[in-house]
Every structure is written in C-alpha cells, then in structure tokens.
Length: 393
Image (cartoon, rainbow, N blue to C red):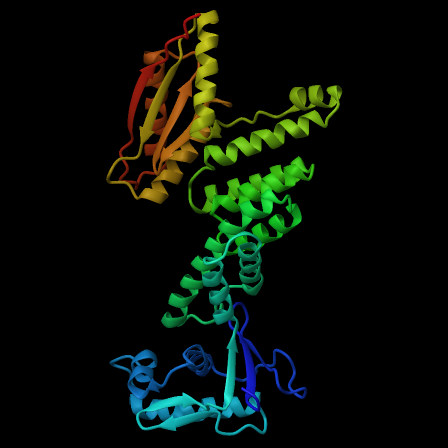
C-alpha cells in the first residue's frame, strides 16, 4: 500500500471523509453543493468500492422503470456530476473513478477505509474471542458506531443497510453491558445505554442496565427519572406498559430513595401525595398485587368487589378506538380504581365495593359514555364481569 492515496470515509452518522495521506485536506470535509441524488450515488459507489459496478446495476438502482429520463443518458450525466464532486473533495486528484467496458471501478491506487467495515470486522472478530479480548473488541465496535448508517440518505439501498448495521450495533450493546456490569464500570454502562436508547428507545435492556448502574452509584432518583421517561414514551408511542422486569427495578429504586429520606419527609410524602381524580393505570403485575390486597381487605370488611375485562371488539380501529376507550376509563371510573392493559384494546379493572349488579351498572355507564362521545366509532364494547372472593384467613 506504500505510495497509495488513503481515504477514510465515515458512514455511521453524518457522511464525512478524510484524506489520511494529505495534511492539506481538512478532516471531515464534504461538498456543500451536492444534490441529494448525486450524493446518494457517490455513497453507493463508496460502499461497494471493492468490486466493479455495472452500468445495469446503477441504472436499475437509481432510475426505475417508467422514469421520464433515458437511464443511459441519466447515468452519463450523473457520472459527470460525481466526478466533479470528487474534484471538489480532492483537489488535484484526477481519475479517481475509472470507466471500464460496461462498468465502473475506483482507481486501484486508492486505499479505501470505511468505518462501517471496521465496525463490522470488530463485531465479527469479537465472536471468535473470549475474556478481555472479547470485551475490547465489543467496546471498539460500540465506539465506532457514531450514529445510524448515512442517516440523511432515504434511498432504499441505504435504508436496508441502515437496519443491518443498527441491528448489529444493538446486539453488541446487549453483549457488552453484562460484562461491564460484572466489572462495575457504571459510567461506561450509562454512556452506552444513553447512545443505544437514541437508536431504539423501546428496547428495555438499555433502561434496565442504565437504572441498575444509577442505583449502584447511589442515584435512585435518576434511575426513577429514566424509568418515567421510558414508561411515558412507550405508553404514548407504542401503547404498551413496562414489563415486570422494569417495574421491579423501579420499585427497588423507589425503596432506596425512601430509605434516604427522613421519617418526617416520608410521612409528608404519603400524607400530601395527590392520588388524582382519574382511574389508576398500572401494569398487569401491579394490578395483580392490588387485587390480592383487596381480597385480604374483603375478608375483614365483608364488602363485595368485582373485576371486569372490557375490550373494543373486532370492528374497531385498533389504535384509535383503544385510545378512546382508555380515555373513557380514565374519566369514567372513580379516582384510584386500578386499570391495567391486557393487550391492544383490552383492559382489566377492579371495582372496589361493587358487586356483580353494581358492576354491570358501571360498565353500562362506560359503554353509554363511549357511544355518546364517539358516535362514529364502529367499536362495540364487550365486557365480562367476575366477583372477587375474599382471601381465606
């Protein structure tokens, strides 16, 4: 490779390049006037720099059938633009992209280095190693992933590769986090989790390890904050609740926060806490615990209580009508009545102090309120009621 021109391209995150053999070229320089399609074309050539790329492949990739322009003529025009683009990027360097019969190839005197290739190589090499070498290669791979592959390129070929590198990165993060936890490298864990969450916010492994690290560092308040951000976002965007695994760590963080408080602070927190005027939405696991407590209370009080499952039916618009039903439950039930989501459009609730007859009246009232509020909805509310039995003592 002695005497060859060396170019390093960063494709993970923002697209940039550096002539590693020249002190005159500014690190990360990129042309500012490149058109979107021309830049995507150039990026495609860079990604496939190891092989000859045929004219047919390029025309099929960038000019679909039915295009108003002649693909062969459009290809010639695009190659002219890209060569001018390369002259802007590498002044004084000619013939970087060569034309062969029926195909195009990079000048063999150029030595290409791509961060994607280094990232992939580190991931693959790590699988062959154990111990410290395994950990070092995983950390190297994580450090190379600066962001999604060509994040501003919305071409189909780029989106496919973006998903591949994203999956590879998330797998590496899941592999490295337990190793860092074993070594008690809490700050490193938090840093990796924060970046991984930006790639896939809904993957619970990352909030779990982040919360564990914060708890280990004596920061349960921050762990609770991370939990609340995660819970609110998956509820809002995916309409799902945190799993029991996440909830257990949240309960641990809450308990540790209370231990750090004085007795009077705890009394004040309990006395002045605002239970709210709406129903209490919770996970199914917490709902089960509330029901178990109610059954014990029933054994002492002798009152009746019921549970009910209510769903939106097959004719409903799943996401829209599920949100509508959730709103009706929040507003129509008593403040503090526990409700948990079973699946999309299906909920379970407990009616304290209500027997079967009273529960039917409550469910009928909820159904009437849904019909009155959402007249155009095709959802038909379906509900089933069961009496709670007091726990035997």
